[in-house]
Length: 131
Ligand code: HEM
Image (tube, protein in one colour):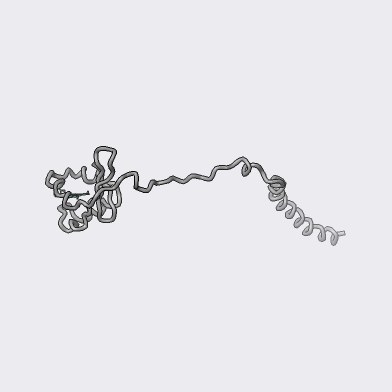
């Protein structure tokens, strides 16, 4: 049995894989839950089965769940989480644009040229004055 939950609702999964989630709204039970409201709230909006099972709830507790039963959700209708898919590089996009390699060289060479020019302009007039 797997718990899942939405806000103060808790969903449990049927053991058989075909059906998906049983939804429980535990909101009215928050104040009365022997384990405290915090335990319930921490079990919402996630798969809470393990939380529920770990406590080792009694059969009474399991029977009590039907009082909070809301309905069922079909897994197939649940939105799927999609991981990030980086855009694939198409053959045309992977081709270098014309002139792009010379642009790369310029990016590297230009600062050096500017530096050499700056030194030249700084030292050349001094050299002239010394003569
Ligand atoms: C509709 C769902 C739930 C129902 C009806 C329910 C019911 C109960 C009941 C009747 C008890 C008293 C002990 C017993 O009879 O087993 C209990 C205890 C407890 N429950 Fe829940 N519970 C629910 C969900 C949860 C969840 C999701 C958690 C998450 C951890 C949780 C944590 C606890 C804890 C910590 C205790 C105290 C155990 C102890 O002190 O021995 N319960 N619950």
